Image (cartoon, rainbow, N blue to C red; front, side):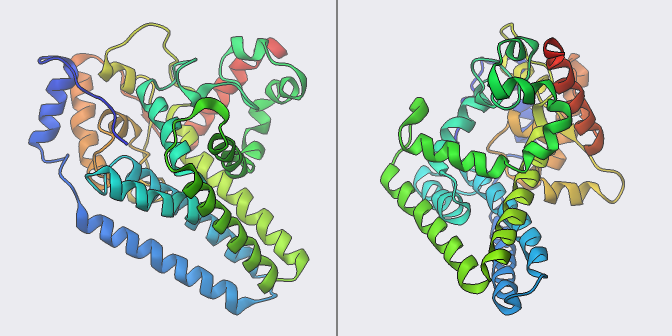
Amino acid sequence: MTIDTATRAGSDFSVLSRRIAAAGLLERKPAYYVGRFALVGAAAAATVTAFVLLGSSPWQLLVALVAAALYGQVALLAHDVAHRQVFRTRAPSAVVGRLLGNLGIGMSYGWWMDKHTRHHANPNHEGLDPDVEPGALAFTQEQTSRSTGAFRFIQRHQRVLFFPLLTLAGIDLRRASLQGLLGAGGARIERRGLELALIAAHVVGYLAALFLVLPPALAVAFFLVHQCAFGVYLGSIFAPNHKGMEMPQEKLDFLRKQVVTSRNVHGGPGTDRVLHVAMGGLNHQIEHHLFPSMPTPNLRAARVVVRDYCAEIGVPYHSTGLVASWRETLRHLDHASEPLR
């Protein structure tokens, strides 16, 4: 995925961009991605081996939790591939992206590319960012005031229901991506037939493995634990990055549009690197939105440059802990639902 970040000479973003480039933070990191792909591949092999060897054992539910984390890491790799952090050109990015997304986790890479590109272009802008369009959740009081039916009840209690709803996030994303592949929503997707075939291969292979290795009841339990935990993991990665941040109505320049709508999530001493791995670098959301093709390992160093520059020009730069980010998200959802109470 490429995002147009061109600005006129002398703009605030162009000054920052020159500083980032001078620090070498836009340079590729092929060795990092070779190692990361190898680690995820090894984890996948170990998980499949444990699944087969354990057979009909209640310990399979622990394997399901591990598989949920593995799916999250595969999704994060697909994200980096889409942003051209791994490959410079479109063709290999599309091939690997479809293998990771469609075949790996059963989600359309092309649909997600279309959706995520629109999100990056206008983050948290109602009517432009698909990630803040109302659905089961609503993000403004205007949205909740227009809700009807079951969504009205859910949105009224969305602060309490937020984490339970995340258990369905992975399944809902797959549903939306399949609808997009079948023509709903007007998404621009290439090679729809290939993407559908890869998703079908994923679904058939996944269900066949469950019901050939496990007895039916345990297969269903594995499916539920795996998919629900995957949804919570995905939501825990992506929700803290923008939910509860400013939703601008006015036109902003590129730098301010990306910074004021994004939230960084930091860890404490000794945990920041763990958080970086768990969130695939997306805990540095401000830097990622400013420089979406920047390789993940460079984001931590870029954070210092961006934070200092924002302080220099008087642009708010928000960074908080993971639990605090959830509190801010829940507080925002509670405020949005006030018209229903």
